[in-house]
Structures are given as structure tokens and as C-alpha cells.
Length: 599
Image (cartoon, rainbow, N blue to C red; front, top):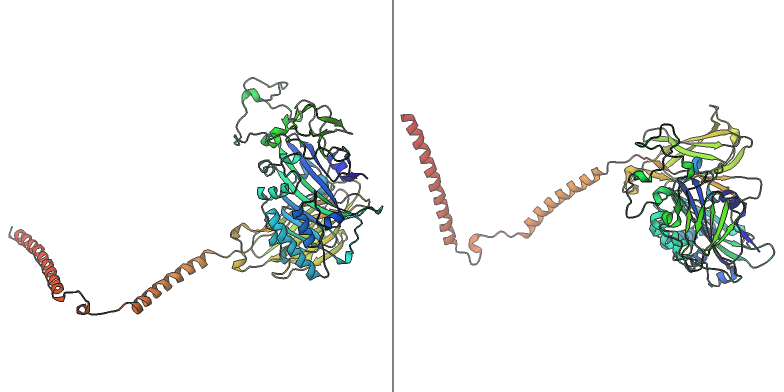
């Protein structure tokens, strides 16, 4: 039995991978996208028999995650942590066809086994709370207002399971405001057999990962029952994809501030007729940049995690997709295989660090990227604090064939969508075309209970752009429902697009960027001023009343130890001294006045 990543990986990563089927293997694919950008795809795959999994016998499937899924009756799980924006025009098609990518922030969807909708939601809440503690994320904030039940967008990845589809419920939730950082990466690495201490996972450093232009961490768990009747299994796949800036990644950590390159380090083009010694014209960047694994990731690969399986097959490999003319140097003793096309494969050594040096020599340093099947961009329209609109541009770059896809949006309940304003038209026409939307599913929002769910089946003709628009109202929230940075706005989850194909290839997904919605915001300083003023008045009133109630007024002659006669004499003496001083000052004044009059 062979396990392969299927035609999707073959077309997107340009490396033909036919892998043996051990219980665990890990792969690293390096693909230069542009002379300045490098795509690094880390993949960790593990498997366990379904019987041992249900009997709490865990090996490569981590116990911490497996017990959570068993307790919540989760048959299939997909968890995503993503930051940044994928540049379709410069980088081409997305890795893995977008199946390992999530929207900005955190995205989670799962198939839960239950007897009713209420029971499935209860187990969904249990799953979110448990995963929140495991991955140090705010997944417990995925409540009913952020949960939807997609109808056409997602399909189960499990194969041949015996579970009845009538008892499986699909639930989907997003947290576009969630900030992905190192505290999410650390639990991710702890799920691996070597905990990131060896193998390709030793390259996953938070300083490099979260400094990338775009990154996505994915966890997928599914069950597989082969058609030949063999034993069912549980498969878990962990994926990390990131696009690194080569020049910024090569910058040493002790010198993070970019500084001008010394004159001797400049690469000038001397073939220009206006070239001179006092100035430099940069050479063609298609000659590329030289880099090493230690320069890009901060360290070399620390040997192999699991060197080989019981059959002697290697479990750790590094793949790089560069032209054959590019000079490359690797650690001595490492097995080097040249696969079809421009892909090369390297098997990691068992205990020694692995290093790879890619020279800058060669006429080309990156392959032509694959054109994405669809371009999508979404933005707000309108102005003011009362109403607004959403506009989505969907462009089909193909010159010969049309494309059909499912467009899925999850909107917060305070965006009051007007379905009758939903229109789709071609960019070359000013009138709506109802034939562009083939099917529609709409679930309206309920205030503070659930959000809006919108799923559309859209077809875009060849070499055309469809403009999808609708209007909405902005609700006014209670002052306790605003976040601390209310004037920043509210994050709206990205739209999910699933491309439909007639063949049986793996699905292709595209996600737009998230949106920032400004809402009417009250003046939060007024409650503060009212509280301060009220507290001051109450403090003064309470102090006066408390003073009158507690203080006791008595005569001076009633106080023990007080000599009233001595006190009166002392007061009389003070009054006389004060009178004498006033008399002296008055006499001097009169004398000066009389003397002046006499003169």
C-alpha cells in the first residue's frame, strides 16, 4: 500500500512524491517563488489503527489531542492558524491548493457525532474549550454568534468510515481578531514525536516563522477505511507553510536594523554604457541570491527525528525545487536524489546536522509560478456610521473555460444584510445578471444569538470579472459589548471560496482577506466623567453625614483634665498681644500722615 499526496501536491509543489507508508514521516519542501521570496512547506504525517486509538493506545497520534477528540465525539477535525496575505499575482497558486490554509486568525471546522443540533453544539463547545487550553488560543470565544453550519462549502475528508452521516454535524467557526504568535507554535511542536528538537521541525523558530510575509499552521485529523476491507486507521497531518523574505531572513539576529551594503558587497552591472566607478547600477535580480538553511532559518537541521521505519525506508526528507543549472552543496554523506523536472530530494542524516548551500550562480533561480484559477478581492463600500456595503471582485483568468465555485461568507449579527440588494454583474455591464448565481443559501442573523450565513453557487465566464455586491445596516451595540479598542473597528471573517471540478482531484480553496468594520462608537469618556462626579458628591455627602452622626459635641468645662480658667487666661493674653500689635501699626501710619501734612 502506497501513500501519496495526490495530484494536487504534484502540480503545486512541482515535486513528484511517492512515499512509503510507515506510521510516521515528515517532509520539507523548499520552492523559490521570486528571487526574493522562498516558500517553505513543512509536513508531518502520522497514522494509528482505529482499534488501538479507541483503546487509548497512542503512539504517534498525541494523547493530549486524541483524548479531546474522543471526549467530544469528533470524527474529523480541521484547525488553522494563519497570518499575513498570500500574493496571488507574485506567488501564483496557493500551496496544497488552499486546503491547508485558513482565514486570517483562527479557523476551525469539525464533524461532530450527536443525536440533535443542540447536542452537536454542546459537544462543539466542549471541543472549543479543550482546544483553547491545548493551543493557548481564544477558541473558547467561538460561541453561537461565531458558529455556522455550512451546506455546500466543505466536504468530509474521511474515507469509507462506518459512521452514519445522519449523526454527523458539521460546525464551522472563525476568530479573525485572534493574533497568532509563539504561544500557539509551542503546543503545535509538542504534538510531534521529537518535540521540535530534531528533524525538520528543529527549523521552526518563532522569530523566523512569525517574521514571514505569510504563514499558516494546520492540523487535520481524519479516519480512513480502505475499500479492500483492511483495518481502519486514524490519520493526523500537521502542516506549516510560510513565505520568507530571503534578504530579511539572512539578516543576523544581533543586527536586526537594515543597514546599507558596503561598496565591496554591491553587485553592479558593468555592461551598461553609463556604468562608472562612482555609482552602481544593480545587476539583473534574475541571477538570484545565495543562501543556506542556517541563514534562512537561523540554524541547520538537527539530524533526523526518526531515521527509518521497520522496513528501512527513510522517514525524513528535504525537497527543493530549483532549476538544474543552480549549483548546490549539501552535507557530506547525505543521499541526493534527482526527481523528475527540477525537484531534488535529500535524505537527512541520522545524527549529524544537515546543511544545504544554494549558490547565486545560474541564469534563473525560480520557476514560473502557476496562475491561480481564480482571483478574489473583497472590500467595503459606502460611508457613514449607519449603512454600508460589501463588494467582491471575482476574476477568471482562463481564456477558454468558465469556472464554478461556492462562495461562503460568515457575517457578525450586527451587520444587518439586505438579501434583496444582493446582485451579481459582469464588470463590462452595468445591469445585474441573475444567471451568474446558480444557487443560494441564506440563514439570517438573530441579535446576539447567531450571525449571518450566506452561501452562493456562482459561475464566472472565461476571461471575465464578476462584481458581487450587497448592502447592510450597522447596529448599535450595548456599551458592555464593545472591546477595549472600540475605535479600531470589528474584524469580519474572510470569505471562503471552494472551486468545483468535474474530475476527482483534491478540492481547491481560496480565502479573501478579512475586513475591518467601523461601528457607531459612543463617547466612553462620558460614563467615566459621570462616575467620577457621582463618586465625589457621594463621598462629600457621606463624609458630612458620618461626621455629624459620629462626632460628639460637649462643653469645654466637661472635658476631664482641662483647666478652664487657665485656658481663658491664655486666650485673653493672646487677644491682648494681637491688639497691641494692631495699635502699634496704626500709630505709625497716623504719624507719617501728620508729618506729611505739616510739611
